[in-house]
Image (tube, rainbow, N blue to C red):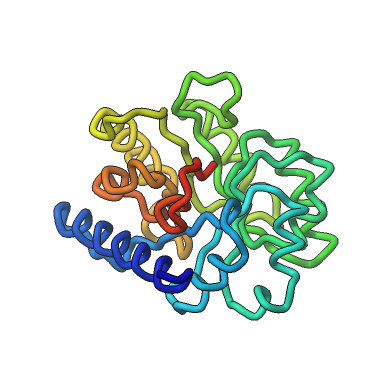
Amino acid sequence: MNAAEKVSQNLLQIQTAIAKACQKRGRNEQSVQLLAVTKYASDEDVLALLSTGQITHIGESRVQQAAARWKNPSFAKFPVYKHFIGHLQKNKAAQAVELFDFIDSIDDITTAQAINTQAEKLGKKIYVMVQIKLTQRESQSGLSLEKAPELLSQLNTLKNLIPCGYMAIAPQTKNSEALRPLFAQLKMAFDRDFPLMLPHRYLSLGMSDDFETAVEEGSTLPRIGSKLFAENREEV
């Protein structure tokens, strides 16, 4: 099986699983968009995925590596929204703002201000998500759900940023059912803080091992990498 066949088969399996998860909860499957995490994938596999014409959101977490890929004409010709999904250092803000459409990992106001300043210089609006920390890992970025509304209020004062949702990384577990209460709690906060009338709103929950549970609990933008590219690595 060549790269194109492998990726197409994996994509179909994921789309089928998302559709079943939506059907189980009476959701419209069109309300869920797949964010393809391309950061670990080979260029061959990413081009195979893009060539299906079914991907509109991709995620990367290393600014320089992403720039080398997505400024290449072979990749740049594809009309996709580019999400930065890693921890952004303020000294990389200028390059990130130039390349990405979304920055999904905002967890402090100083980084947001740096992004806003660079976006203003470029005359650009950047979509941003607040990253919520659902784990106890010290190395994990994000802030508590209780502190999210305060940061969201601050983000709304920055004219070149468009706050559009919450992103969270769940604790690692072999039992995705154990994550259901966490996902449900975040969905409630999302609905409270991002009303339905907003033109852009995303709840980015779920990765390769738990995306079905996340979609059942309301995720609109699961982040999937290893299941797409058959690589045994984490997405974020």
